[in-house]
Amino acid sequence: QVQLIESGGGLVQAGDSLRLSCAASGRTFSSSAMGWFRQAPGKGREFVASISATGDATYYATSVKGRFTISRDNAKNTMYLQMNSLKLEDTAVYSCAARNYPTPTMTLPSFPYWGQGTQVTVSS
Image 1 (cartoon, rainbow, N blue to C red):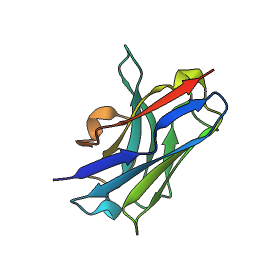
Image 2: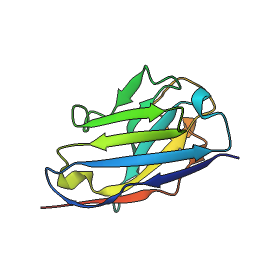
Image 3: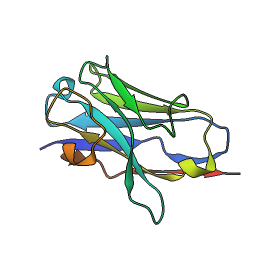
C-alpha cells in the first residue's frame, strides 16, 4: 500500500510563490515516477507536472510551464512543486500521485496511487 501526503497549500495573492510537498511511504519511492494534478471547482482533474523516478525527466502542462518546477528528493521520499507567479486560475486542490513505473507520463489513469490533496487559493 502506498501512502502519499501533500502539504504546503494555502491562500496567497496573485504573483506570489508557494511550494507544495508530497511525502511518500509504503513502497520504493526511488523507483516510481510521480506527478502533480489539480482540480478546480466545477472542473475535472487535470495534469500539472510529472517527474521520472530518477528526477532527470519532467513533463509540464502548457499552462504552468515556465512558472512551476517539479522536483524530488529520493533520500527524503519527498516530491515538490515550486509554484511561482501564481495566477487566479491556479486556484485548485492539488494532489500528488505515484506510478508503478519509473517513467513519467501525463495521463491520469497511469497513476494508481493518490494523496488526499491540498488546497491552493490565489486571490487578487
